[in-house]
Length: 155
Image (cartoon, rainbow, N blue to C red):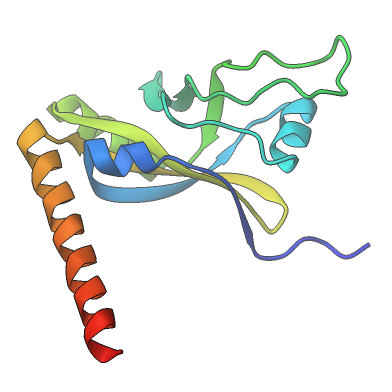
């Protein structure tokens, strides 16, 4: 049987891009249990409340919901357990230094399979103020209206 190739997106955190300015992104591997992988292959996961933290020189993913595998037995995993992130030492040190500065947090952006392995894209992010969010929504709406006007004009 041929190995999987390419990138298959499982879950995206659209709320993160709305609530945060993402300064930098990193790709990390995940340490998962067998039933978690099977549940992800079914395309079931939620990154909405998730975040990452650095504890004792290790990166951890917290509060990400991967539901229990429906055909699992007593070996099933818990849905919101603490999961280890696989990053290079330099990346972990950089993330730890940036988050200690203050005002920055680590949020999960995209969960996907890359060549058959579960990966997560995390972002170093700074929170947006309410007026930033309103400004971004106004810009998106203006772009949509311009595109709509151009489409009607070319007809």
